Image (cartoon, one colour):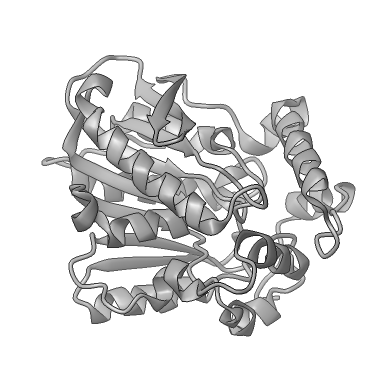
Length: 326
């Protein structure tokens, strides 16, 4: 390990039973999702994820897309404003698990304190749907949200994309294709990102050195690749890190977790962006585990990371930055 996992994370990991990801069935994955949702709603779960910001209201709306409907969790400041920036967010979970409400602590804070309208997309998951359909959900939802921005009280000319883990895949890909999607993306925020879906995923030094981290385990990584993008498929198509031309992509804030098996993908992508002339800020949180911004009750690094995100968004979405203390 590149450091010591925080005590509270170690205790919680010891108490939780890890599924057998190498042999898990589709029905069992659905059971895991349901169990995770129950945990997030429990008293212990609320201690892990922490409470939403009281300055934000949280509602759900439905997007009607071609041949499907997606729910979106919307965060807006209690004090109404007009033409707020629009942050489109994608949760993590390896495209197998996860839901927008796991990021309530972060997203409600951004909505209340930037302020902004934050829309977290509840995209489809594997193995019921393959990664191509999941990526299309991100593209179509982003376009529809931009179109309906005035209805939301948001400005379609000031969009930020935010994603963690596999959600960072969606944020980064949407940023790469923003021009053809006719989206005005000012910036992107990628948190402990998963950016390489090829077999190279297992070759980064961090994957070996942090293999004993509580998440994502090697077995989980094998499952997410196998179930979200089974052979034969060209996984470079969905790997932002392997995209040929990154010229003109929106400036990025990339946050790496020092105890994350995926850590090395963050500096690798920052280097690719800089080589393309894109401004990229890379920050490493050495005592953070993967998904640390979804469990601020366990990982102290979540609070300064959230403040950094707020400051970055102020700089790129508002004319005169002004940050309230976290």
